[in-house]
Length: 159
Image (cartoon, rainbow, N blue to C red; front, side):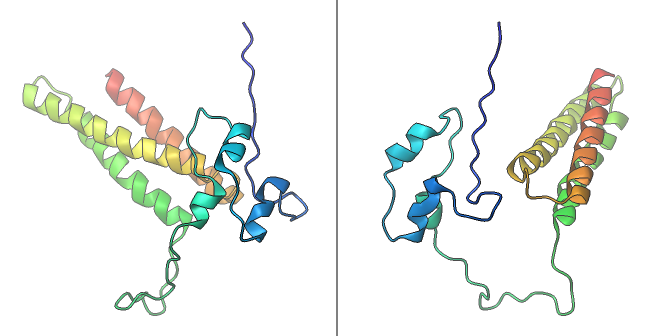
């Protein structure tokens, strides 16, 4: 049995920087017919149409009372990767130390493994949703972190 892979290009612009035909409606005030847009898409995943995305309220650049740190740098994707990866590695370390004959420690280890898996899954979501938008360094870091955490997870859960 041969499985066929169908690829849908959902980028707004062509490689030449031109707006793709299916998104030309964004240039006009006229909203597209959602059923016509959906007919062309793969319905196995639920994604918002460009019209739905455009209907979100604008996020103001300067919210009263919110101040960015003076002289501080803007957060990066690498910061986000670290923010999600750090708890996963801590949970994995705690789970590996909790593998003993003690029933309570074993239960805590299982809970730590579940929490680690949540963070690993979040990193995978980040990888899937940023596909094609990360530079080589960011992509490499994200792939490496996910691989290391998944490997650690398997080693600890099989112990």
